Length: 330
Ligand SMILES: Cc1ncc(COP(=O)(O)O)c(C=O)c1O
Image 1 (cartoon, rainbow, N blue to C red):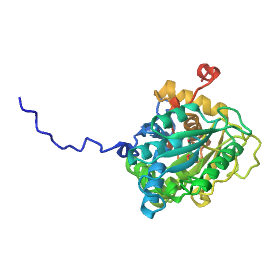
Image 2: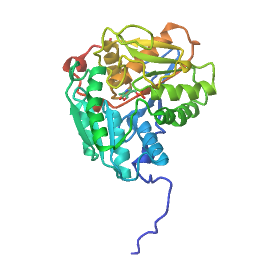
Image 3: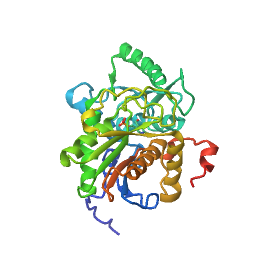
Image 4: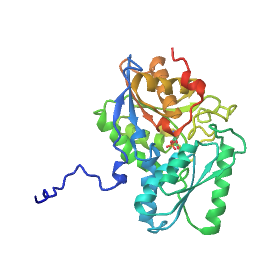
């Protein structure tokens, strides 16, 4: 029998790059029955398992467009891991060698993931924190190692903390997606900040669409520098955010306030997302949702406000400690 003729459909993605973005928005109505509503972007559904796929795609495309990166040439970056996993997706599809410098304190699942996509991951010993808790000094140690290689080789450094294409990814993708998915009904946006690309780009777009929208940064308790407080707890569980320095890409004019979340609250809401919503996510996702609940309970928004936040990455990227798995969520 002759094979059936091939029919082109738009159901086939041409590569993993087309799987980046357009993540679903899910209502957390079981975890927070009201008043008000929390809607969360499922960033763990990106092919690299986190929100950082978006900026990976934008930063590489921008560098190829402006000639900083030539097709097929090597790429270097320092990361808490998720940027490395996202870059590994992009580098695999576009066929670039990729070397990632990451603190040994960041979860080893991320190193395994990026190496499975063909990247090399150099895990730099910690100078201050402990495994699972990475401080700014630890990131600086990884950065120092990476910069030595940049100096020696002249290879392209992505530079996520200073790269405006990082912010642009969220201004052109995340913000418009939220606006479309909510039908323009969004009263507040809540997000943690590492580079602050997510917060700065998304908030800028949403505020342009609705100047009355309120945008809040989520900071780990004890490292609330955007709130203007001194750092007394550099070591916390919110890997990838809250480095205790105001990020260079952060824009104060698109922020209305800050919300502080303790490790215990992040763990509690990480667990609640699993047991009440069936969503297995990481610590900053737990922190975002804890902060959204606090915001709705604070009474500073209209009673039936919709708060949008981000489920930044999958829980599969971490090794929770046994006490966390059993923790009581009552
Ligand atoms: C798990 C996680 N949450 C939040 C963030 C913060 O995202 P951004 O760098 O866009 O501020 C990161 C960044 O690496 C991350 O890995």
